[in-house]
Image (cartoon, rainbow, N blue to C red):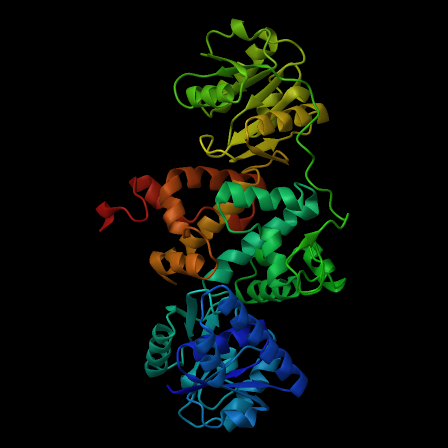
Amino acid sequence: MDTVGVVGLGTMGAGIAEVFARSGLRVVAVEITAEALDRGRATLARSTDRAVARGRLSAADRDALVERITFAVGLPALTEVDLVIEAVPERLDLKRRLFAELDRICRPGAILASNTSSLSVTEIAVATGRPDRVIGMHFFNPAPVMKLVEVVRTVTTSAEAVGAVQALCARLGKVGVTIADRAGFVANALLFGYLNQAVAMVESGYATREEIDTAMRLGAGLPMGPLTLLDLIGLDTAYEILETMYRRGGRDRRHAPVPLLRQMVTAGLLGRKSGQGFYAYERPGSATVVPDGRTPAAAPADGGRPVRRIGIVGTGDPADRLGDLFGQAGYDVLVTPPEQLGGLADADLVVEAVADELAVKRALFAELAEVCKPEVLLATTTGTLPVIDVAMAARQPAEVVGLHLLDPTRAGALVEIVRTVRTSAEAVATARTVCAGLGRTGVVCGDRAGFVVNALLFPYLNDAVRMLEASYASADDIDHAMTLGCGYPAGPFDVLDAVGPAVVLRIQRALYRESREPGLAPAPLLEQLVTAGRRFRDPAAD
């Protein structure tokens, strides 16, 4: 291929045009009006100027890149291109009309590609007389930076067209993952169920936007929280993708847009592009967040009762690690086995670190209620059990919280502070202060299976297993989609093997039992691997 066309010069289209021109291809960049063309030219100029300022592109290379792009109004400019890719709004009727027109204008051998992120490429292809030369090329934002391209073949796409586009991706320096035409492809099918669930947490008041975003950045290592990401994507775009995935993907309720999302779109709260979404921004298009007073920020880490003496109940690891953590923070710490609780009579906080079994924890908390002073704060470290079931064994359930420490050995790590329907505000404030004293970030959430991090992370992992189980994509391609397309630090199968399939299965079962949501039922393949004692990349499985 020597010359490619790009239709639509919004953020994605301008970025795709830049990618092609950087690789030495001639580009014909098309818009429907002169005004839209000027905006697209300005978008591309900002991107390339920014690359020069950051040392990623020389001024001479930028000038040569721009020279390779011809800007034009109207589709007739595309008569001689070898491939044309559209990046127009995600509306099936619009794309079908566009492809019918491209079919008429472009030379017979040209490949017609769509950058759609969720629509059926097949339904677009049949609007043309050359469905064998229609394909999906889903770039990720920002296109000049993100390495992934989802190459979407339909049942009519020819092997020649697929091979040509795969070769083009390699020439562009991109990783092309070739997949079939199904709702959401790989990345969005995994990403948007997670994003939708995060919106549901905000809608229900389970946790604030800041706490959810902080939990997923610090607890799951993601580059940004789900609500910040939705503002970046655009809430209207997210809504349309979810609607499409719900209709085309088997009507899974997890992809049915949460009512809050629809309401925000209706109100014009679209995210960064409008200047306000889940967060408020300095101006439309800005990334700088300003206080807006709509959603209360996380409470400051102060207040509550003073805590000086801390008891840790348990033997070995993790009790010893918790003892070291609190001791290094300057607290007076006593680590004691469950059989010797007498020394805890004057403790201000007692943290249990015993087996994660309900009967064991309930028996322990009943004993602690007899031994400790009335105003002691009691904390369970469970990551899987309902905190209220443990709290009700104590004399004062109002003084019981969950303290779920994720990676307790790492400074700045996350602590999920779990409040039950009986937990007092003073107990929560005390727990916040203690977490701050440890140098940890505490986020407060309700008492539901998985709390925040696991409730959002594990269904995403389970969805990845279902995708592998259906032979839609390989584990490597799915991991590439999430690391190269979404900027995740690790793909879902790397995470599954690091956490352990048995742990994922146990928590996924808890999520399913609590919600009875069919989409949360553990994938049979996950259950089979746990039964076999294997991981997803277990050498013994080869």
